[in-house]
Length: 332
Ligand SMILES: [Zn+2]
Image (cartoon, rainbow, N blue to C red; front, side, top):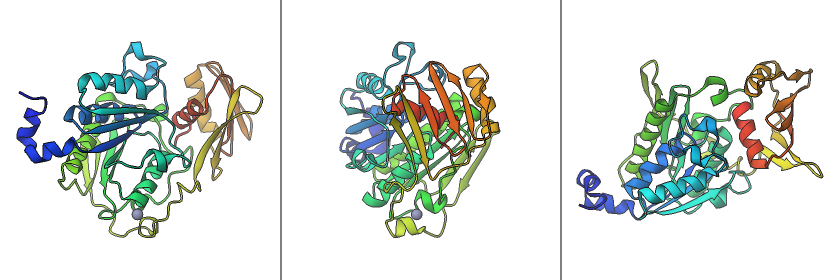
C-alpha cells in the first residue's frame, strides 16, 4: 500500500495526483499553523513553505502541536520543517524565519497556488489579502481566540476579499488576543482542521465553501454566514494599501542602544488603564502609568508603551521578537 492509498480512494487518482503539483505557503506556525501544516504535508502537497518569525516558548506547548520541550528557543519554522520532513519526506519543505511586512510580503508570498493564514494578527492578514488582490492567489482566512474562530476561503476574483468583509483592520489595542481572552487548544484544532479541509478542496480543484463559518465551540454554536454581496473598491480597483505601507507596525533597532522601537501607523490611542493589569499579570510585577506612558519590566526587558501606540523595548530584543510581543499584548 502506498502512502496516499486511503486518500486516493476518497479523492480519486487524478485529484490526489494534483496535490503533488501544488505549492502552498502557511503563514504563522502557532496553534493554527501547527495543525494546518501537518495535514498538508501528510496529504502530500508538492512544496510546502512554512513562514514564522517566532521562537518556541513554553506557553506555546499547551496548544501548538508541532513543538515539544526539546524545541524551546528554536525558530518555529525550522522545528516545523524538521518534524514534517520525518512525517513525509516526499514533500519539498522550506522554512522561512521571517516577519511578514509591507516591504517583503509580495516577494515572500509570490509563486504559490494557495496561502493559508495561520497568523494571529490583522496586519499579516491584510498583507496576505493585498498579495491576493495583486496575484489572484487563493487564500484561506482563519482566526481563533478563546474557543471561537472563523474560516473563510477567499478566491479572487470569483469571491469577495477580506476587505469586502472588514474594510479596515481593528485599531491597535481594540482586539482580543491570546493574552486577553486566552485560547483553548482543541478549539483551535477544529478551526485549523476546517481550514486544512478547505485547502484540500481548493488544491484538488473542488469548489471551496462559499460561506464564512464561525464557531463558538465551548457554547456549541455554529454559524454559516453569507459573504458580502457588494465588492469593495480595493479588490475591484486592485488597490493594495497595506503593501503600500499605509497601515503598519514597524520595529527598528535603537541606534547605539540595545533595544527596539515599535511605531504604528496610523498612530493609535491605546487605553493604558486597560493595558496595565494585563502587563502586570504577564510580568508578575507592578507597572507605572502616567497620562501618556506605561512603564515596566517583563523578563529582561525594560518597556515603555506610549498612548499613541509606540513602544520602546530596552534589552536584548530583535525587531521580530518585539513585534511578536506587541501583537500578543496590544493586539492587531
Ligand atoms: Zn474586496
